[in-house]
Image (cartoon, rainbow, N blue to C red; front, side):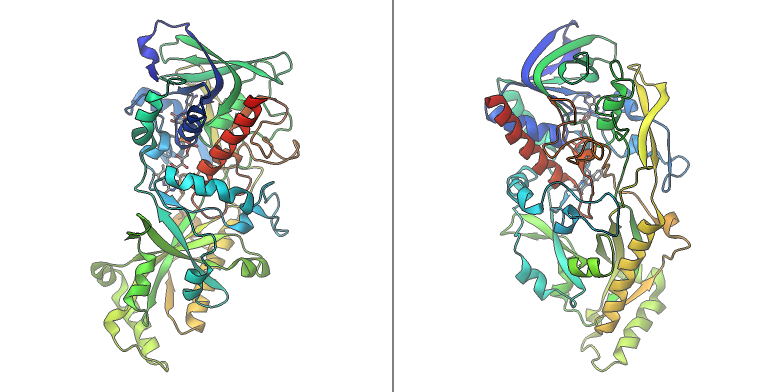
Amino acid sequence: MLIDLRELAGNERFEADVCIVGAGAAGISLARELGAAGRSVVVLESGGFEYEQATQALYDGPESGTLIRPGSKYLASTRLRLFGGTTNHWNGWCRPLDRETFTLRPWVDDVGWPLTREQLDPFYDRAAPLAQISPFDYDDATASQKLRLDNVIETVYFHVSPPTRFGLLYREELERRPRVQVLLHANLRRFETDREARHVTSAEARRLDGAAFTVRARHFVLAAGGIENARLLLANSDVRPEGLGNDHDLVGRYFMDHPHVRVGYLTFPYWDQLVARIYDPVYVESRRNSICGVMRVDSDQQIKRQLLNAVVVLDRLTKTDIRFLDADIARSVTDQLMLGANPPENRGKTYFGWATVHGEQTPNRDSRVTLDDEVDALGMRRAKLDWRLRDRDARNLLATARLLAERLGANGRGRMRFVASEDDLWERTQWSYHHAGTTRMHPDPKRGVVDADCRVHGIDNLYVAGNSVFPTCGSSNPTLTILALALRLSDHLQGRLAN
Ligand SMILES: Cc1cc2nc3c(=O)[nH]c(=O)nc-3n(C[C@H](O)[C@H](O)[C@H](O)COP(=O)(O)OP(=O)(O)OC[C@H]3O[C@@H](n4cnc5c(N)ncnc54)[C@H](O)[C@@H]3O)c2cc1C
C-alpha cells in the first residue's frame, strides 16, 4: 500500500513489525522480503515518485576534502531523494566484493569484516535477480584463467544491470502487499527512545510543511543512504547529546568512496578482437545481462606487494579519439612491438583503450560526516562532509596501473602510455558516488557502530542497511553487496520476530 502523507491531515499513527527509513535499493529490497513473509512493514520515504527540488535540497550541506573542488556539490548531486532513491540514476555495474576485502591485511589499519565472502555468497545469489542480473559463477577460474596475463594480472567480471530502477520495478508489488505501507513525503525527524536510549519505541516523520506522524514498531532500520544514515544517528541527540549509537565517537567517521582516475591509454597489438571485446560491456544472451571484463592484481600478489584492491576498466578508443589524442604515440607503440620477435599479422587488429583505475580507499578515521550548525527546512542540522584521501590511496592507484604496464610489456602483449603522475593525480581523480563506512561494522563497540547483524551497538532494536556499514569497500561497486546485506538482515529480523 502506498500512502502520500500530503493527503492526510497530520498526527496520524501507524504501527508495524518493522519500520524502515528510506525507499532506495536497501529499503525497497528489505520491505519486499519482509512483506512477502507476511510481516507488517511501514517504510518512511522522504520523497514522492518524482524529483522535487525542495525535498532534494534537504541533502545540501557544506563539504571539503581531497577531491572536493569549489562548486563540487558532492552531497547534493551524488544521491537522489525520491522513491527508488539513487537507483533512479545508477549505472547498474554489479560485482560481489572480492574475498580479500573481508580479510585483515596487516599493512593497512582498520580493514576487514566480521563476515567472510563465503557467508555472503548465498545472499549474493539471492540479490542478483533483484538487480535483474544472473548470479555470479563463484568458481569462474576457468574463464579468468584463459584471460590471465600472467600470475600477476587477471581478468574478472562485472555483470551490468539494465540498470534496475527499483522504484519503478517494485512499486506495484509494494502497492499490492496489504501489510506493507509505504509513506511518501515522510521524513524521519527523530526516534523516540527509552530513558537510556537503549531501545527505540517510535519514529517521528515530518512532512515539509511541518505536519508530524508517528510510527510505532518492534524494530527500526535506517536505510537512508551512506551519508544520511550517519546524519540521522548524530541528529538524534535528545537523550544522548553525542547521538544514537555514538558512545565511542565513531558515527560518521571512516567515510569512503571509490576514487577513480584515467591513468593513461594502452594498446594491445596482438590482441584478437574477440578477446578485446571482453573489456567492452557485451550483452550475453545466456545470462540475460551484459558482462564486462576488468583487469586486476591477483589476490596473492596484492599481499606480496602490499597493495589495496583496485580494478582497471578499459574504454575502447574510437578512431577519432585515436587521431585526436596522440596518433603518433599510439603508432610508435605499435611500431615498437613490430620490432619485436613476433610482429602482429594484422596491424588493423590493434586495440586502443583508455585505462581507468578504480581503487579502494583505506579506512581513515579523520574522513568524516558531522553535523553543520545550519539547519534544513525540517529544522534538522545539515550533513557536513570532510572526505579525506591519503597518499597511500594515491600510491595504490598508480602502483596498480604501473604493475599492469610492466606486465603488459614484460609479456610482449602491449604498451601503456601514462597521462597521470604523482604530481597531478588528485587533480585528475574523480569520485564514484559510493558513500561508505560511516556506521562501520565491527563486533567490538569500540571499533564499530553496528555488529555483524547490522544492529547498532547498545540499542536492541535499531539496525542499519546500506553501504554505511561497510568497514572496507574493496573495488567493486557497492549496490549488489547492499542488496545481499539487506536480504541477510531480513532473515535476521524474521528470526527475531518469530521469537
Ligand atoms: C550517477 C550514479 C551512478 C551509480 N552507478 C552505480 C553502479 O554502476 N553500481 C553500483 O553498485 N552503484 C552505483 N551507484 C550507487 C548506487 O546508486 C547506490 O549504491 C545505491 O542507490 C544505494 O542504495 P541505498 O538504498 O543505500 O541508498 P539510496 O538509493 O540513496 O536510497 C536512500 C533513500 O532514503 C531516502 N531518505 C533519505 N533521508 C531520509 C529521511 N530522513 N527520511 C526518509 N527517507 C529518507 C531517500 O529519499 C532515498 O529514497 C551510482 C550512483 C550514482 C549517483
